[in-house]
Length: 331
Image (cartoon, rainbow, N blue to C red; front, side):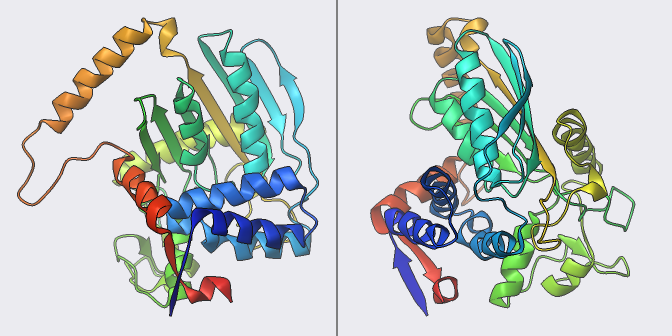
């Protein structure tokens, strides 16, 4: 059985549930907007799929609903925050807001946040920055679930990253895990009783598996082999080492160790294109790049999309028609 909800209904549903847990209004709004954004864009693994895990962590004490991010250190171009084991969305949003203010005066700014819990889809944050005219790079580390290239033990996290480029009403928006797939998609498949692509994970014996339960007890593979492994290592260095957050096994799973914070970290870089060329030149040159890519002859039956373009279309459809869920998410 399925049910269709508008984006406003999704936000209201999440807000009402979080309010029963004593979550402050502003935090409710940020978390609810993040989850609705993910589902609206078709990134279901990072939408309502995560709500039950958040609630379990609140009940067990792993999320401090009243936590307020604190400044650890800062100067004109940098900012380091401690999220104090609050909602990951609140911590990353505080970093975004703080760096956007600094970016008004500086061409390039960067910052970090430690003591993060799960923060949802990273594009939620980088798109905000792109819509205000900034190129954004966001990196977040995660608990070990991925084997380094050639290995069969969980050593690195899925370690996602998002890059956003201002591009009028439709920012170019890359959001991806450095693993073959986000771990949340494995949990989602398990919840819905679905099989997975065997290239996504290895079982405990090191063999490819299409069983999500075996994947959960095994390890994920890196995206594009050694390339994804290299990206994951860089993300770990920025989001974990530089931020002062946990690294590798010091970061907990959102589904385990519920009584303590996940100890993840994030690193955000903002670049104002106007520091390097005029706004008009930027728009013209980016349009040339886009035209060059979009004018490529497509494969039969295929269309060439910009990063984030499919998700932009999904969101437009969701705004018009709502989002359809399996009723399990509302029981």
